[in-house]
Image 1: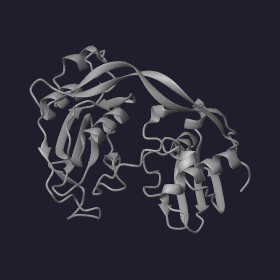
Image 2 (image 1 turned 135 degrees about the vertical axis):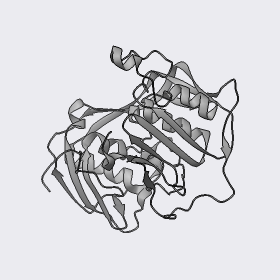
Image 3 (image 1 turned 90 degrees about the vertical axis):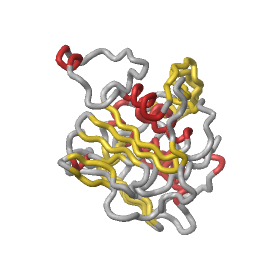
Length: 297
């Protein structure tokens, strides 16, 4: 991502300054949530996200749900309240069909009730059908490196949920970086990736790594508590954290890296490593069928 407008990817909260609050671990979302439905919903085809065309940062507000430029695959991912993309299998066309959704939320419904309302919406308007199954996947364990952890315990006072002092990102000498008071988030510019953690657990770091690698990553550090950290690395080899990444070309292979690769940055900067594991059982939602065109509004 070379565009300044696409620098910030927030993976742990609604804003860069928000303190992480882990979502409840539901064994079965259908059984644990109240059965709400949107009162009125408008679904219209739209263009995909891109430079100058972005989705909605905070789609849920009291009484209203609005998602601008969202693919049907992501809408289904939200509907099942999943944490990682590999937890759902969809037909390929669902990732290339984009929609704008506007809906009226019934009285008494909260953001926690959103998944069940989205599932009803997908079933009613797209006739979506699915089933659950357990699949075995290769993945990783996050472990402590031989050198020991290099982590700073968080202070007693967590970062404010609302905006802190000044902007989250500032540019110095033409290089974007997190401001001093920024909360947790991820920043990408050129081939550089930065992860800033504030009041983050090792379990949440494993979840962030899982999102980046598109593979299961389990916390096996046995480190408790919350920590602050900054991880800076060169992007591009995330799918090969064990060091088996083929060089893109001869010139790229001989060019010195400005920052270490992700696997090396974890070890050098945080004192952590990724250890490959096999046959991790993952509960997967499989979309069996859905209509590409929703019923009329």
